[in-house]
Amino acid sequence: MTQGLIVIFIDVLKPFQELTGTAVLEAAAEAALQSDQESGPSSLTLHRGDVVICYPQAASQAEKRGHAVEDELQLLVVHGVLHLLGYDHASQEEKDLMWEIQGNILADLGLEIEVSEE
Picture 1 (cartoon, rainbow, N blue to C red):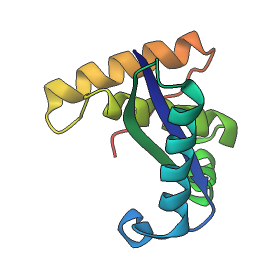
Picture 2 (tube, helix red, strand yellow):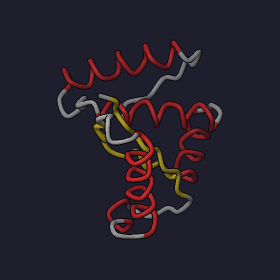
Picture 3 (cartoon, helix red, strand yellow):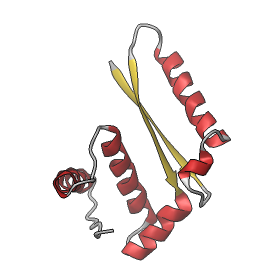
């Protein structure tokens, strides 16, 4: 079984809820469907979900945190994928585990990004 993931970059500063039902999410659904069709009927694809990243917000966060926007985008993708895999940071224990895994992945990518308490 393969696992699918779609990462969508948007260029608007709107709350995600305002995007529901718009062309952005329709494009994500279409891309997921096309991916499933291309993988063929003999393969099973589990679509975990989508990661939607607002580029202007990522650029703002990168500037605030003092690193390149490319680094922030990698952080956001890793963070989003961890959420799709079931990790969360609602409690301090969950956060500690998620931040540790996130830090290890970013280090493997060659990034040393510190995410402040927000």
